[in-house]
Length: 613
Image (cartoon, rainbow, N blue to C red; front, side):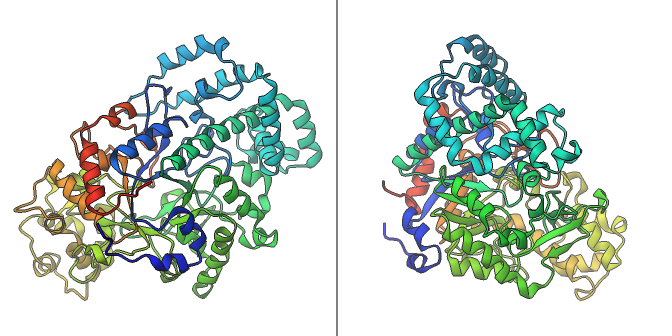
């Protein structure tokens, strides 16, 4: 099939080196956290070698791009975008049976018990696996004596000492101080006094070496997975969190690189009406730049060992970051803050300086998460550099006009077209509970701004029996903006925000139903046929990449919880055990033989996204 879309300009852009390496091809991709997938060999959580099985599944389906969520060490606070290091990987992803240079026979009973206590395939990850696995890894490490492996281990330590030593010391100090944050450590360690740190390092040399050994083992296993993917024509895309935890080795080691009196977040928008308060400290870019961006370059080059491409989380943050004063009450979320830098005319060049370093110092292809409140300069720079941005189908509409979904040719060619992301409901849950609704908190707030008493109008506007999860569903009999404005007793000029909220959502289900080519009245249930039409439509777009979460690909078949609102990876702005713990409905072995594979392959082939090795 010939390709009607022209991507030749990608090879003349600032990212031409990366595009030549990956190839300028329409690709279908899958997004998943490693913690979600599992095989019969996994113990409690997805492990590095499981990526090989996922690559094999990609071979069955025609998918040629895998995007993972961050793999960084999160300590015992299991949030992948709030890690304790921007470089170190998390040892919970190690396969005990694939450790390099180790005789694990003595640990056989412990491994068998671990496998029994943490069987794969539960609906949610039991993160108790991390401590249990670390205990066994510590025992194995004490028996690590194979000479040729020691040589490779020593070479790894020497090559990566610039960040590895600080990280290993940081982890050891934490463990010796009841895992408290570095701001609560004794003064001399909190301030990283060289003499005090050296004395500590001498005293706990073996424990520090253990943390370095874990990183070497992770390096070996993930490098092996990357090589397997490359051999089989599959691009691995990593995820580089824009920020790092306040309680991290990065911040402790270079406190001058961060603005510790501020918290990062995101301002209010249509989808997160209260904004977001993340808490990680903003970068002090002037000081990072004064050191030649070494901190950033080191991070990029290490990531390059494992990935061909990377998703730059919160891409708009390189232009300006929403910052919140540390004394701002938590209940204000992200509502009260300011951009850094505050002057809009500085944003574009500020971002380009950072991006130029990232593009020049690595051959990985950058891809951008450019969602939320997006400044104009972000779109301009993505177009100039030919960096794929994120076009989420449910939000890719003619806003403020007819509100219809954009046609396949109206997506950005330099984009990743998606039905859902790890921060949204999956397609089936969106259709069941969210499409055709408005956020209650946002609508209440907008009513107050327009002088409309929400309590007076809510029952006339919304079917409250069918409104769940903080989403208000419009009454079916309200079919025009005129009827809506009559109920709220305002003109369009007096309440345009309210009118816009109504127009963008009241007929959403019918518009989407028609857009993907379904006939008749919309069904409430997301049937496999509905999912197939949705996947066909997003893959048919002119976006160079189509990147779907694993749940949406698998929804071509029936599986438990596929329409459940809670069956999702993360709910932004919330904390709880159901965030960052979702497990796939099938093992990788079962996925290899699943009937949906043929359907996926047909979609990939028919939308010209099949990349031949």
